[in-house]
Length: 479
Image (cartoon, rainbow, N blue to C red; front, side, top):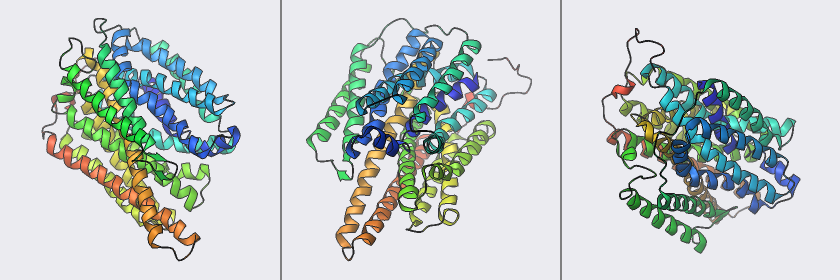
């Protein structure tokens, strides 16, 4: 069961990054502009982020196995359409529909994980594997995207999802029994409209804040969408306090462990996606790595995530306070990004990049699974879909916001460098790029550091009873 859920989650996370390295090849093949290129990524994020809470409720209403199967089948079908795209419009549409099915699939996977693995010993192992996939999948996506683009075609970055989906679908058919609706069939329509519209406006507003290499924060469209997001999300909170069957019961967020965990997921997602973006730019555009070499460069990050995830959630989570584990992970990630600020035009991989990438992987390998574990801790089965959707929403919206903010700060740093260094043409431009990356790494490190401070202040010292070590004589089928 765990293998099926991990494979399903890997497909979701991979798709957020596997296309990134393939974009230059897709652009050349389909002939779309550089300004339009961002929408291949943004279309997926917009649909995914804005529909997660609604789809989380659907998993509770329709049954988790049902929504898992629908999500896998739909994701595979639309990936085939995207891979066969003959135009920019067709590819963007396919990516948006992929995001819709990912929004249905993600809460189904996590709610099944939460309700299937309830024994503390098994839960720690399960969330260790899941956390490694959730955190490391983004880096694996870069590696896989580089390999497929270099040796096959950019289209295989979409076709590969069919393989993952079919394997997971067959596994789900064999291993999972029927998971029926856990709640009465009530849907909070005002909540759906306000939160979906609010999250769409938020992600779109931040995505529109940067176009190409231009700072676009003062654009009326950007400002309008961000204001709309504030109004709609505020209205959503008010609605959730008044309706009988809320889309997102606020008790999920108000829990003494879950609340800080959602904050950590948002900040960790913001820092991670920003870091991956700028390290990718640096090694390809400055150091001249190929797409495959750029993907391989992230292997130490993946290895660190897997090692820390398994160790942290199998061995440490039942014995060490989350008030220690979670801030420590975020602090290690902050140190890793801070060390990346040593880069220059000719940095060696082993001398400059290797240690920071390992620390980033170790830190996020502790932070992600611990946060996900806490965010779904002691959740009532009737709320499992909503809680799982909230986890993915925190990561997805955090990544979109973090990428836009760090990109803007990087552009400002490059502009400031060029305005004070006009002695030659090529050299200041190359150094301006380095200055932009360094600024992004510093601010990304600050995001991780803020997360570490917030969690150490808000989390309780005690290890939650639901995570403590169980006696060895507990029956293996106790769940």
